[in-house]
Length: 438
RNA sequence: UCCCCAGUAGCUCAGUUGGUUAGAGCAUUCGACUGUUAAUCGAAGGGUCGUAGGUUCAAGUCCUACCUGGGGAGCCA
Image (cartoon, rainbow, N blue to C red; front, top):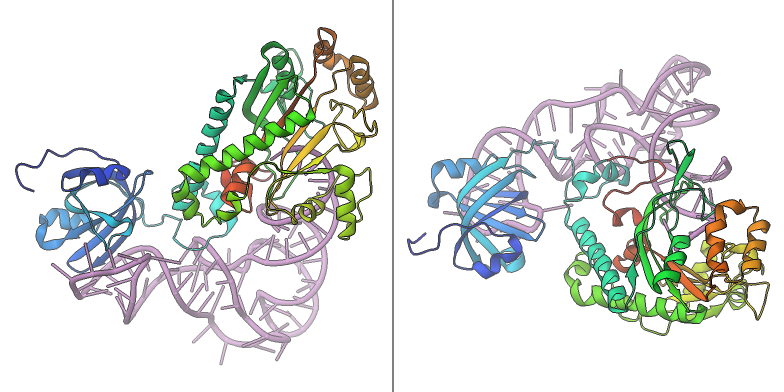
């Protein structure tokens, strides 16, 4: 390097193009080495990008050249050299190496290879699998969606409220994780923040929650985790129709945001973005009765009164290029807190939102029952412990109010936008029935 | 909880109607190569065929049980 070059500096790979012609130092991990005798290549990654580095024997100090031979997959290194544009390099940019320091060696048995692996093996090595390009793309898109969620609600005047994770038995009916709680018997990991969200909506107007939820269901499907993240807005004075308008504006915002800012990551995942570009308002709205008629016409044995199964959902969605709302299910198929439909008291004012392309249900929402007597009657009908819901009933005693909200499953949404068949890849460390580590 | 499927080298898999010493690619180690793109070429090492029984002259292969995992149902997001 010529003496007028600036002194060495540390640079992230993503920033390299701004340092063309300068000598810089990158600290990163080796993903790949190739050698052809007197010229050799090491590909580095540092989380911000990937960069090819070039080692030329007769341009390097002998000890630096010999050090190259020690590089193995996932060795951590500091590489110094000149950054330059180079058409032959992946990504169009590379470094001509002048110095190499090995920071941490990596034994030759690094398990993840650039080839097909079985899912059991990959999940056992999840802590290392995360270093792969595709896994990085997924993590980036997930983070973009999380940020977009906060931005959407902030811009729309919502207050974020954090609801408890340790709760008394309350909420959904499905499996609870229990843990000892001092002298108070068992506490349960929260399955929803909704009931607390309703209390907060009466206090603050428009709120949302964003947090982990836990379901001890023995589910082994591509759509279930025992620990997943849920976003639950709750809006005072919204009815069911307003609730659905909020959902479609919200989902459309999230999809647009990823399309605008994370095209490179969608490309890494080979996502067909035309499928995302067609996600525009208004979404399709089907009454539950219409939905049953549609699936029956297509051969389903589902009868009026039963919940729609996974196959039914696929049959419904097949006809549309955008998400579908199925509204106003029979009371018996849905939770106790949903408001009775005044136009058909057999049903409740609720909706599911089904993602296109067969990705299934990503939202469940409803207008909440705001009539004290009807809510109490439903609690009795379901055989729920009334004393556990005394505070929840108070929300109807002290100034009851029309309100509605919904729960968005974060992993299902990310899986849909990424075009992934299984939600386990969409969270860094998935928790499933048969898997508690890493 | 129920139904279906799979366990053979570090990884991904092949292994015929049961028949000699268990096969490949990738990875690893050694060697060759001055522009490679999951480089290429040559060589080498690497196995209690998930576990335990059983049938048979003979079992990776057939039978039973169990273990582990996967896909799906139900439930839901």
